[in-house]
Image (tube, rainbow, N blue to C red):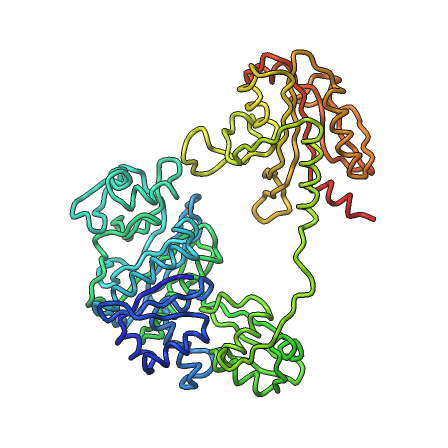
Length: 543
């Protein structure tokens, strides 16, 4: 739940209801309200209903439930004369912007707008890492061309609230925002920035705005910029902001983008969803006619139609929480009124059960412990030097020695063994955990895999010392592994093997090369093995 506070009289006036009625209506919207001191109302909103984080968004939904405004809200739009030139910003590649005219704020409206901005930062923005919002007084912007680029750390401007000219380096070290958010998008000694055409800074996302475009209670024209690492989240955030402000009477102005992902923004995306009428009846428990479903969706501020079998729904840009047919049923029930739904007895006839993967991991863990191995846990974030370029490098590591995501469990086990060479031999350890591997078929270029690694160190060691234990573990699962010679950088020549099950490679086992022993600070011979839990799971599922 996300908690937002509003001036009671402002919220009730916008919703055109009394306080007790508002409480009932917000309950139907899966929200709760309680009075606070100083004439404030505290509203707890579901984290997926970002459109309810401002009083205008709540008013839009409440008016629908009351039947005062039906179907999707429409807003006045115009093409502004502003242009946003987008340059390459690798650490924060996506940007969108819009202008708004005829905005009415006042002191309470300004406080609420800043609250709305910060709540978006902490929800869809993931504390500004995924999305950051800059809101400016448009009347203080001097050029029609705005630029999105990067700046060196010696570039100077007057940050919001600082009262003096500061370099970006000083902002990062001397301001609270700089210390909290400065490292998020810092890359190669440069930070993203929204600039006027003449080079004056408007904002340094995701850190801080400029004093130049500071908002006041009298501000009636806005420039909003949204930057981030997810294009979808960036356009969704801007759409929610501008439509909520437009609900309060503002006019939405589009900005032309040059060099960006979109030709102009806001995008104001509409999605379409088709749901079988029978599914709505079955899931809701009510035998509703086509016309009743359409009428209820209209109260939920959704446009829809029904041909007798299928309900076609248009999803507005501010309703990013609606993803599938179950969400449509929920909208129908909210418009019908949760307080009117008759509860029925529900008997659970089947208990929960573990995932097949969890069962396999637990079995592997028990078998490894039974074979005399001790389980260890290492960090997923690692020093890339231990992987010799084979790990996923972080763009903005917090520290120099934690700069990558591991691509194997083996280096972690070898480092752990190097710190336990003075205990009684043999030392036998294992770990089950996730690694990240390159995958060209994935959108991100990488994929997560669950692996199991075993390692042992002794004064004298042989290939069979680990291979026999691993073989016993695998055969106990009901599979029959075989082994073929395999040489790589980790293993001594002729002392490594691929693990094959049903003609599929599932892992490797071998004696660690002296070069690797020296690299990890090991003075005794060691054996390692690594098996893909995901591949084992596939094989065990195959009849």
